[in-house]
Length: 248
Image (cartoon, rainbow, N blue to C red; front, top):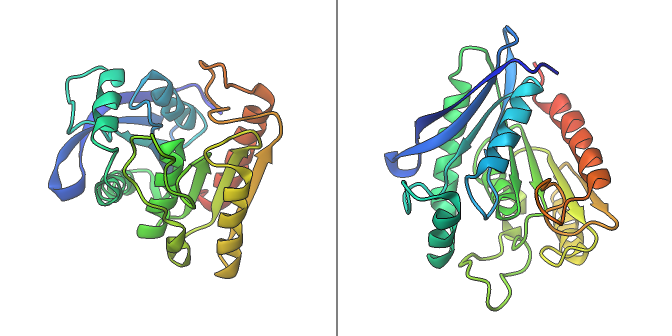
């Protein structure tokens, strides 16, 4: 792990050729070849805590890029206001999400030190979107951190206008790591068990871990839901997983 890195806001080409904002973190370790990660932010949006995750990957030797999924709706708004606008619109359309992640992956593969391998990770709504991207694009590793609405539709009253995507399991293009909380309601352990069963049926490589005493958003250090023991173990599993599939 090196603390030397460069992080900056850039523009990338996303879905439909749109130019969108993104946050890039790159190690300054002089490595000739490295893997890369597309970070999909949580439902609260393209915020400081999500940008910290990008820098964490860069500090650990990966180029990381997080597209601002709400940029089109609210390019000049605060993260909270942009997230509110996106929720009012029913969330990010699935096709647009795939296009934005594809653009981010293309950008990472084109970096000078890229080894051509790109993973994806997402939290909350981003966990579902990580699975969606891995079933829609050719990627090398995917991590789903407590992504809901993969197996079940959104509960009544939730503003998201998305449908279950467990039917995409046959198209999963890469190994999947799932990190969940036993006390989570969205997704419940029953939902993640059904997802695991579907992946088993199609012979898709995956490993799921469910942490007792943890609920939704247990990685979020700035929220009451934070569970240090589960989060620390989860990060170690992420490093081990990406080390196997994204290393040169």
